[in-house]
Length: 602
Ligand SMILES: Cc1cc2nc3c(=O)[nH]c(=O)nc-3n(C[C@H](O)[C@H](O)[C@H](O)COP(=O)(O)OP(=O)(O)OC[C@H]3O[C@@H](n4cnc5c(N)ncnc54)[C@H](O)[C@@H]3O)c2cc1C
Image (cartoon, rainbow, N blue to C red; front, side):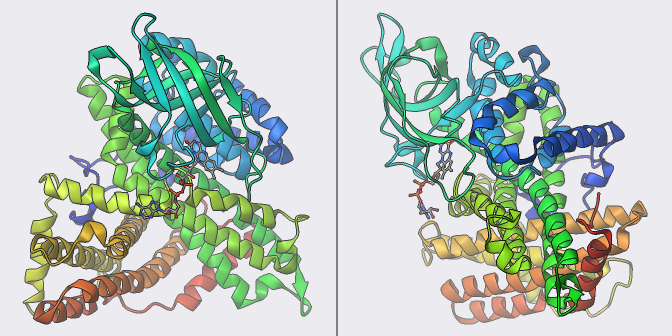
């Protein structure tokens, strides 16, 4: 067992965090090995030397080649296909560092290495993998992913592009219009989704299907570069297909099963997105702290003002929280991956299956990461005052560039809906014993609360997170019960679905930070006290958020005594002692201000 592997006997299944106690051993970034740190340093140096080129459209293809030369593009690809076959946690560390670049290069890199390359790795035949992956891994060729159409964005399966089969030549003729295609301007390879039709299709199958298409095939035309709000240096174009002939062997997976590709690739894409926002946040916080130390008003640096310190501290708390969750999920996928390999799956199928297992957690990372980044950039602009509104300073571009993360890889609304639907599906299939756990919480409410106080270190924090789960189970359990009684149409009540999703997100994030802190205490981490401040601030805030979301939900569908008892339950489970968050935030900010950089180092 290497040092990146959690030691528990059985790792939690996807979504299971909600019903397990918080005695789990998770992987934390402080456990990254010396080699992994060296890899990080190399990536950081690479990003540093890219400088302003990361924002230039004409430089994107070239930078991918440079990243390819360093082995960064194929870090996650098996060696036999020209990659470095690195383990998941190393890839996570690499992506975090590349995320420091932020903006346009992030989009280029993520579109190529994620949604561009992975459909080939997971779903193409060996012959097609050998044909494309070595050059894609080296960054010599670039890939793009063509799913979205004018009439189908979130409703991706509603795509109208067609792929007409010709049995005589065993080819498909693809026609249709794709929009918002990242990397389209310089891509050599397109992953294209279209509806297969025609006489005598293989196995008489039709429907939504994925293909690998060479960008220089006859009949492909590109639209102009889009004028976007942000990531202006990334290439985003429409791609028109007019009777583009594609050999049958370029088909991905099975006919009519393109949704398996689209959705599974997005699971991984979502994790990668949250993973990269982490590096971006750390860099932007450093930019803000430096500015706040340099800028003087009323004869003192603005970093001496409590109002500015609050922003700096809050940026740190969110970043630390995201980081805890990212490395936790990374390692879960890594262990699951190995389990699948031990069961005989190929490297690539194991990767795919492990991402599917933790699809709920991947959606959580995407939503939390993109919204935390938006908080960080918004306050970065504010710290810069009027200069934040000027293109002469980095804050304005960072603000514009960050916004896309809440829209692509599935909008945050779609990801929220998905996380709850996936959870409910697991409950209905009996894979997740949520109903029993929810019933236990209901029963607890009929008993008097215990007034004995555990004085062990972090006891209050552990209780707080247990209680967040109880609030989540109470609310979600009640929603399921009212639905089964025909009193709530949950699937069609999106406001409640959104509340449940946010409860899920907040609970997972809070637990990730708690488990990290528990481990850091055992390890006597040099920054333990500061990191514990972040935990306390987070729990103090999270409790109110979860309690409100639960109350809003229960008050909307529950009734009578049941409603009254459950609302009292929410109050009972909101008993984390109020923290002196003013002092805690001041400490976090003071450290960063003194160091003149992001202060909660791993
Ligand atoms: C810069 C950029 C790069 C992109 N790159 C790519 C790419 O490389 N490849 C690719 O295929 N696509 C790409 N996209 C497309 C992107 O994935 C879509 O824009 C996104 O999925 C949303 O689709 P839409 O724009 O049609 O919005 P819509 O689906 O029309 O959504 C509009 C609003 O309605 C909400 N909504 C939609 N359906 C529901 C629902 N069922 N319940 C609740 N709310 C709902 C959405 O959350 C959103 O707020 C890119 C987009 C941009 C802007």
